[in-house]
Amino acid sequence: MSPPPPTFDFDGQAIPFRPGQSVGAALLAAGIRSWRTTRVGGRPRGMFCGIGVCFDCLVIVDGQPNQRACLVPARAETDVRRQEGSGHGNLS
Ligand code: FES
Image (cartoon, rainbow, N blue to C red; front, side, top):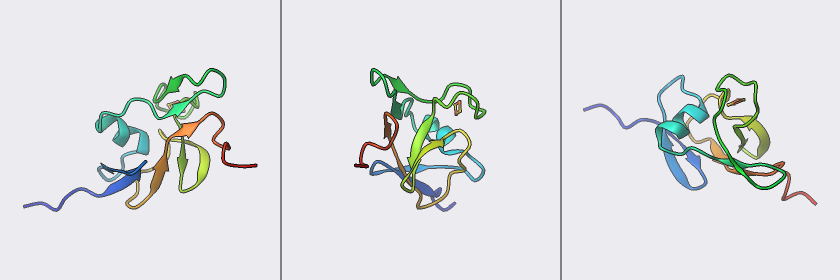
């Protein structure tokens, strides 16, 4: 019997991943297709180019906003959160 896959936290949900997978790939594999909203209009966005060019896949990783989910390697115990707008909404 193989051990369970490692997971990272996504807004309170444990997301399994395979070694070498990006955060974005793991989210897609878990059936999650959008994880941020646009600054204007609040429209949903997720993976688009998948290669770090379009910036559609921004997430908050360990408190750092504007991280490209398609480039951030998935790591166990990482705290990943949806990003609303610029991701700085909690700053005054
Ligand atoms: S999907 Fe385009 S930068 Fe990540």
